[in-house]
Length: 417
Image (tube, rainbow, N blue to C red; front, side, top):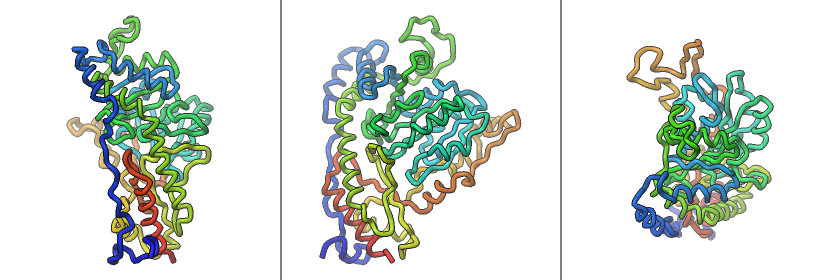
């Protein structure tokens, strides 16, 4: 009897997933060589060393964008992108709520206000969902390419362009992802990439912002370096405010080594994700989240969309049955900012008094922003119904994916009406 038709592991049957997941050292390239060379420079400051500079050059080659700012995190990269967009106090910035706090930290830090739009079943925003929340105060749109899947960013950029609104792309989970043959992060005014340890490539923490406009590049680079104007002619040194978002030479050395293999890593994720899609093409009473036509996904993770009208099981039952089979499944619900205490209490700075505690959620002009699911019905439904899968990894194998697919088919066939 095949694993797909045998008794569920939940009920004492054999598990579908029996092969251990592949393991390995993700820092097995030239990381040690470059780190040693960085230390031998006798400086770890990017302004005097050469490895951050080399990593930026590698990012330019990788993305095709002429300007790159290296920084301390993906969150910092997004903040720098908002600076490039000219975001300031009281501005509204549209983004999706199914993302990490890093997407909105820069918005709030600038005294601007996040406005959440709905998503499609792709988990991505669309022109329609963005248009629904645009107001005369909208000053930017952040397109989050979630889970290694691209959003329809070309159409979103066209929509925003008609209203003079810049688009910033959050590519933290979407290294190597393409839409219409073009890499995400290159459609809008800027693209923010993360090298946090939980991304396709890692420097522990770190990030890059890629841009195509020289003036905006200077603005973002100076903001990342306390506005020393270090990379330019110093004519704007200390002319304006800036943060310290600098990348160190140690991060730059690791980033350079990781960027040398990023195409191979993301191609591996793409092969595994495509294999899972093919195996589940005839999944009864459910499907994987859809991928846009003409897109190239790099599958940082994915999700199942069960058709509960055709299943004799609720989500918890399905998740428990999948986990019993060894499938790395969990309820989809981790990616939701709306329910977070920050957006429910709206207390930004508890140590301040009066209305200042709630700024920018409550503004001096009388505006008061509250957050619920009224305008994000698809997002709310997916939070309650979808199942997250994390079957991928740099060292996962095709055998791992085939067994996971067999476990999913086994569970869904068992509960299908």
